[in-house]
Image (tube, rainbow, N blue to C red; front, side, top):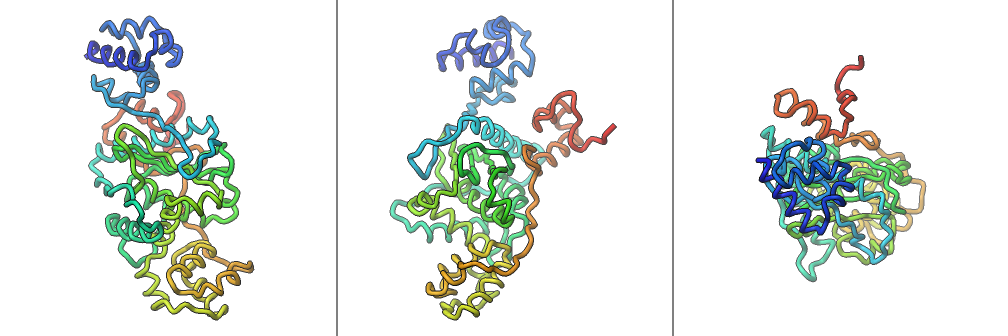
Length: 376
């Protein structure tokens, strides 16, 4: 086995045109042990091998078993704009998030959890972005077992339990960032909400909208084999207006939260209401039932024909009635996905993984207690 591992390491290192010394420096390990490994001599520790695998963009668990499985890092780009204002320190945070998504997927398979649904990716050239978003929202609801009329509950739980997408909150440094989605061609995916997003803090129901929005990117954006798809969404309205992918994701989020059949069950057939008082009542009922921000309900009811365009400005002019509270369960800032913690705990209880592996999966220091361990 050690000979196979050494050969994989040597071939991967040479493909990246790294010397043994350069690889050792990047992986924070002794060059002598890496050289010995490549010559088929044991001696390198598991933690050292994990760091080597990370630098070579290989799956560490597969490498330990003598297999070569590429594990590319996020190649970050702003999908919706040509401006390159992504902050480099956020690379590490996206690495962390995607590792959580991969671990969530692997543990689900290990524990026999139902496989999340897979969807056809990409969009037909020339397709109407909003219509595509509505259609994909209906498809996602159907394949996720959510039905076509009921209100969706906890969006974090839905994203993780139904679609296998790890959700975390991290402090992103990129200006105006609200959320990021990242996924690979094998289906592993993560959504990151920005802990520094002041709009979400002042309007907690935005968490539901952002999670639904990013879910569209994760489930339906095209991902090429061997590459990663990363979408950074910002508060830049100019970008959102011209980007077809953004238009589709916005329509998806609104329809995912407020499905057509559900609106008809609640409000009846669309009548393009032009009376401000009556229109305000329709918006209030819809946003309370489906738990959305006021603005999202106004725009969606206009787009669906429930409100006449003439009343939109009046409804968005301020003085919104008190809305429902937010029931989205989210992890603490910087902590792993809630479902990942639960699956690690279950796998450890079933002796499917070791305590050391559990701590590594949750990024807990070897000397610290696991999150559920009682305090001494």
